[in-house]
Amino acid sequence: MEKIQIKIGDVKIGAGAPVSVQSMTNTKTDDVRGTLKQICELKDMGCEIVRLAVLNKDCAQKIKEIKQKSPLPLIADIHFDYRLALICIDSGIDALRLNPGNIGGMEHVKKVVQMAKKTNTPIRIGVNAGSLERELMADKTLSLEDKMVKSALGHIKMLEDCDFNLIKVSLKSSDVMTTIKAYRKIYELIPYPLHLGVTEAGTLRGGLVKSSIGIGTLLAEGIGDTIRVSLTENPLEEVIAGWDILKALKLRQRGVNFVSCPTCGRTKIDLIGLAKKVEERFKNLDMPITIATMGCPVNGPNEARDADFGIAGAIGEGYIFKKGELIKKVPEENLLDEFEKLIKEDLGELKFFK
Image (cartoon, rainbow, N blue to C red; front, side, top):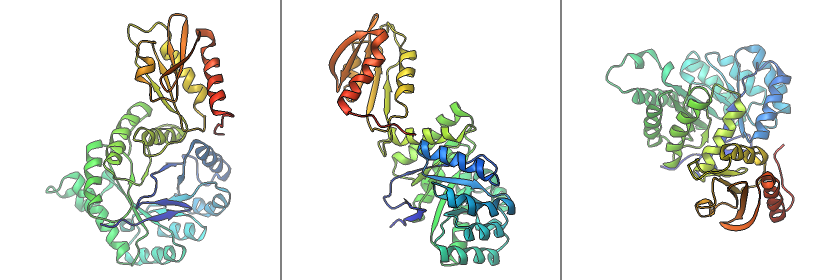
């Protein structure tokens, strides 16, 4: 099946385009200053598309001002009130997150689609396991993932019946395996790009685990075009996690890939502390390199030989190496400074994210 590519702002999605990283503001959308501040912070962290909750007319009417100053493409998240979608499209929104089945019938759907066609505004259909149509929830013959797929296909048909195909789809559950199964099924049935995520994944620790398994499994299978790691946390953490998933799968690289070994009885330095210091010092380095922090010189250079640069600890001292080759041995207290000095000498002026 030939896949369809859409654009949200200047970001291409689907049909071979790079997987993009999204997040969502948690500010009040009618607080223009606060919302723009967070959007800029998200961009600096690597976010490529951001979604805004449009709860009412006051929020919708602020979209034009936010759009004029936003450094990122914007998606308006709208439920039930089709009129908010019309205001947002008229204000220049880059895309909508809107389920056509819950905005009051085909008459309203046609009004939204007619306007979206004129402006080439894509619509994301977002199916969540916890908010399916009542008749689907009552159906005892279908699995939850099949109910999600059936719901999505129903929404898609409403748009297709209006001759509209600028569509993106998500099927999210808080259960990882339900999410994976739903995406696998819908992938085989539709040509549209898929937005991946595990909804209501939880706080930082649990949410990272669930999202990494769910999103990572699907991406490894070639399924998915955009991602959001949904966390009960500062949305900046969602972006960091999203890029970490892409880097781990070698789909995209942004900044440093950090490698460090677990501690063991051979470790004679504060490896945990050292690894954290290395990551803190180079976390904003805008260069696609791998840095390894290893606990001892026995396995360090060999196990991290694919790293561009690395440190291996010893008793009161440390070893600095490059591509698995030992460069120098230095006292522990000078290790981090000497390490940074070596990287600068090799790479020249270091570039950091804002």
